[in-house]
Image (cartoon, rainbow, N blue to C red; front, top):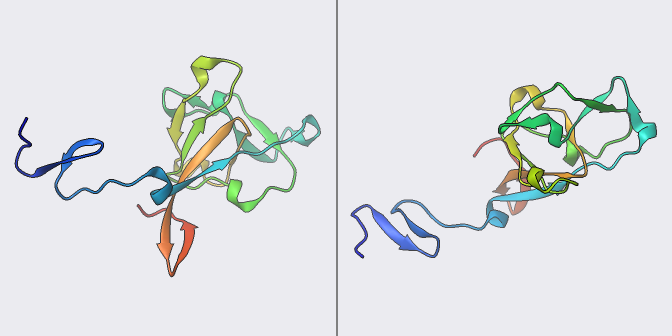
Amino acid sequence: MAVKAGYKQTEVGVIPEDWGVKSLGEIGESIIGLTYSPKNVHYDGILVLRSSNVQEEQLRFEDNVFVQMEIPGKLFVKSRDILICVRNGSRELIGKCAQINKQAEGMVFGAFMTVFSIISIKRGKRKRTEAY
């Protein structure tokens, strides 16, 4: 089968000629979420994004958990990160995902979640970035 003009055949299929193929590890990193205990949960504090906060590929804030504890900087979400449910007692919840928006910046995500964050390569160092 011939490939249409302006397209090329790659290992992932036919793509536009000016596109490249990269693995996810080349363009971003996957970060595992926060582990916390009941003693860390409070009526206010830092909101922990969980699978219940992802509804129809959008973030929702009707069922929230807040923690007060020290949190590593890499666990604070940035706009355009992708939040993914990777562990859960219900199989149908695995894979639920939503893109982080400006409203969610500064929140963290729970241990059953992963964030895929785009990285940029600058001066030989990998760092998280908002610019894609």
